[in-house]
Image (cartoon, rainbow, N blue to C red; front, top):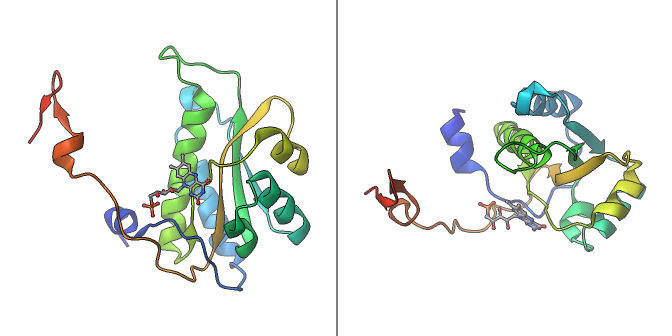
Length: 172
Ligand SMILES: Cc1cc2nc3c(=O)[nH]c(=O)nc-3n(C[C@H](O)[C@H](O)[C@H](O)COP(=O)(O)O)c2cc1C
C-alpha cells in the first residue's frame, strides 16, 4: 500500500470486531508514531497502549462515554509535556502529538486496522485514570482494532475552496 492509498482508505471507524490485534502490528504502528518529527527533536511524545477492560472503561468515561472506545480491543493515547510554546505561539505538544497520531493512523490503515481520532475527552480524569504525570497533557487518542464498519461517506470541500495562491489569491 502506498502512502496515498493509505490516506485514501483511512476513515474514522467507530465499530470494531471482537478480535485482538497482533502484537507485531501494534509494534509497527508504535514505531511509525515514534518516527514522527518533533519540534527541536525533543522526543517528548509518550504513547500509552490501553488494553485492559477496566482501564478502557475509565478512558471511555473520560471520553464522555463515547461507545467506540469500549468496542475496540485497545486504545492508543498520545501525550507530551505541555510547557513548550514555539515562536509561532503554537504548543509544540499539540503539534508533535498530532503528527505522531496521524502517522500511527496511516500505519494502522496499512495493517488493515481502524482508528478514530478522539478529541472529545476531559483531561484530568483521563490523566488520573492512566497515572499520567502532571507535566504531560493528553493531546488525542484513538481506539484501535479490526473495523466492523466501512466508515461514513467522505465529506470534504473541493480543493478549489480551500487552496490559495501567494497572497490569498485563488489557486485554481
Ligand atoms: C481534532 C479531532 C477531534 C475529533 N474528535 C472526535 C471524537 O471525539 N469522537 C468521534 O467520534 N470522532 C472524532 N473525530 C473524528 C472526526 O469526526 C472525523 O475525522 C471527521 O468527521 C472526518 O471523517 P473521516 O475521519 O472518516 O474522514 C475527531 C477528529 C479530529 C481531527
